[in-house]
Image (cartoon, rainbow, N blue to C red; front, side, top):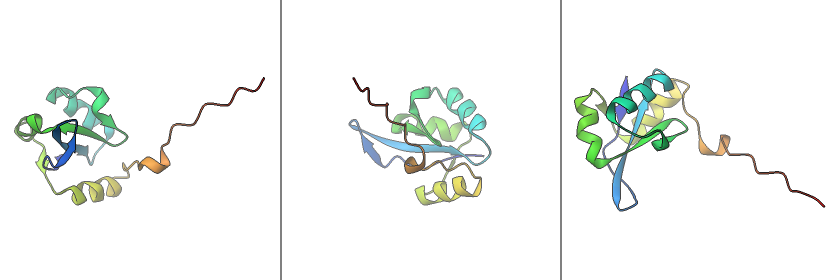
Length: 96
């Protein structure tokens, strides 16, 4: 199932929602593509969706849930990818 929270997260002069799947990241990517969300909107375990795509996401079948439910659903599905566990390794320092 696909879920999203209401647009409440401000960034870049817009409000944003989070779009998740409790089945798989593959399901999430397919839904996001149908929604027209660019892949750059994917952030480890969710897509950031601008408020102007919220109604279309609901029309396509996403269920609206509170933000705390999204986190709980991700953990229950073993799909949660916290930022602190998925840091990009730093580049090695070149030594002369």
